[in-house]
Image (tube, rainbow, N blue to C red; front, side, top):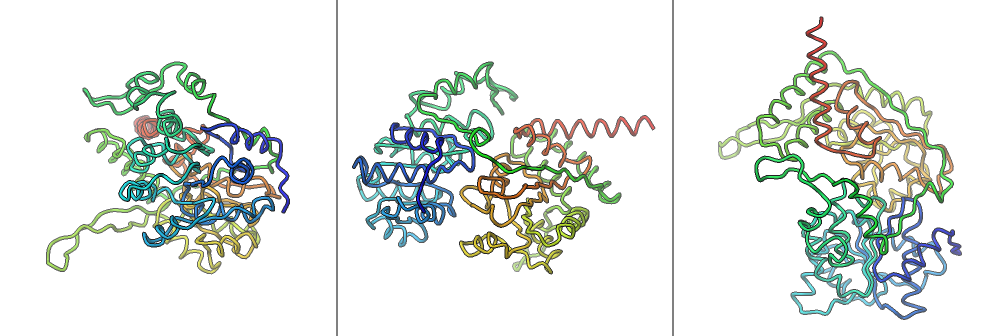
Length: 474
C-alpha cells in the first residue's frame, strides 16, 4: 500500500528527522509507528545517518505490531527486522543477526544492557526508540537503571507515548533523563522533586507523597518544550461518535451488608496500620472485587508435611454484574462485544457464565485476525494485555467494563482499541457500576483523568460517614 501521510504525520516524521532527542506525546490513533518507521527508513537508506535502530516495546507490540506496520506500506519493504525475544539462546541469535530494526520487550532491556557489558561489546544500536515510554516512569526500576547506562551512546533517542504522566508529574523525570541525562529536569529525582514539588502527607521524616508547587506543570513542560512534541487526536482526526454509558446496578441486600461491613473494617485497618500506598491499594482492590461479585481471601490448610499452608481462595458475593452483562449480550443481537475484567476470578466467572457464546481472548496474530474478521462474538480481556499497538477496531464497536480499573493508563489504552481512526461505527462504552460502592469513586476519578489513592480513600470514608449519619437520623 502506498503511504500518503497526513499533515500531522508529516510534521511528526520531520520532527523525528530533525531531532537527535525527541519526546513525542501522540494520542492513540495518530500513527506513531508508521511515522517512526518512515523516519528510520530515511535515516538508514537515504541519509546514511544510522545503521541499526532498537525498538523497546511491550511484548506483543515488539513481537507483532512494528513488523506488521512495515508489511503494510510499500516504502518500508526494504527494512529488515530481528526480534530479540524468547529464550536467551534465541535472543543471542537475534542480536547477532544483521538487520535494520531490532525489537525487544521492555522486560529484557536489563538483559540486553548486561549482555553488552559482560561481553565488553560496543553498544551496537545508534538509534533507540522507546514505544510507550511511560513504562520507564519509575526511577527505581531495573529497566530504567539499565537503559540510562547506554542512551548516551545512541546518536538518536525517541520516546513515544500517549500518556507521559498517567499518575502524576513525578513520572516525567526518568523519561526525560533518558533523553538528556538530567540536563533539563535535574541530574537526580531528588533535585527534580526539590525544584518542582513540596512534601505532602508525611509521618515524621517519612514522606508519603509529593505535591506539585503552584505553576509546576507549566514550568516543567516549558523546560521540555524544545525536545517535546505533543499532538492530540481530537485536533487531527475525524473520530467516530463515542457514547459512554453508565449502567448502575443495585447490590443484593445480603451482598450489601457484607460490602458495607468490609468497607468499615478496611478503613479501620488502614487507620491502624502505617499508611503507605500498598495498604491503600489493598483496601481499594478489596472493595472493587466485592463490587464485581467475588473477593480473594486467605485460608490455612494442612500441607503435605502437616504444617499449615496459606492458600488464596475466592468468596462469592453476588452475580448482579453477570446478570447485567447478560442483558447487554442479549440486547446486542449477536454484535461482537469486548468485555474488560479486573481480577482473575472475574475472568473465571465470565468464562463459565458465557461459555455458550464460546468467548475468545487475544493471544496471538490468529486471535487478533479472528476478532477483526467478526468471528468472535464475545471477547474477554484484561486491560493490561489490551493496550499499546493493538488495532482491533475492525472487529466491533461495543465495550463493556465489567470492572472499572484503578489505573488511568489501562482505561485510556483499552478504550482506544476500538475508539480510534479507522473505526466505522459509533463506539459504545458501557460501564457496569455497583451503586454506592467504590466503583462510583473510581469512575469519577477516571472521568476527571486522575486516579489518586488518597482521594479514593477519602471518598470511601465520606460514604461511611454519610451512611452512619443517615442511620443516626432514622
